[in-house]
Image 1 (cartoon, rainbow, N blue to C red):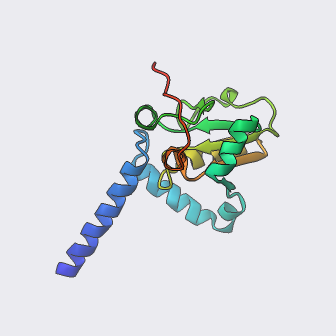
Image 2: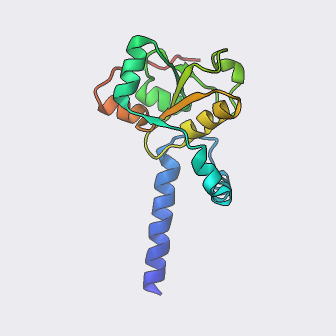
Length: 159
């Protein structure tokens, strides 16, 4: 009995950590579990559509060269706490207007969110890929990894 309680407590702690990691107010446990079950049901099809990951160093180069559109999928609280990658386009949520994206569907797009545990960037990137954008990427390290690497951030615009 004690072992069973310990396992449940551990599972609850992991779930709580994952839920807090992203700071997104629109993410709920039910949407997370449905996303997991949806990906599981799709099997190898989900693997084929995996969004490529780029490093902080890659994004630093893209920002310097202006060779990609960088898109911030964080919520306002995360932006206020960590700032944003300089020049990033701020998305308004997981159902952001597609008009936010560049007109050319061959432009390089890089989405990021809070960090390695956050999946808001994956959802935003998948939306772009579904709309026909061909060069869609995710910076898995997110804004936390960007800052940890010593990169500068811009203050989040106040609304």
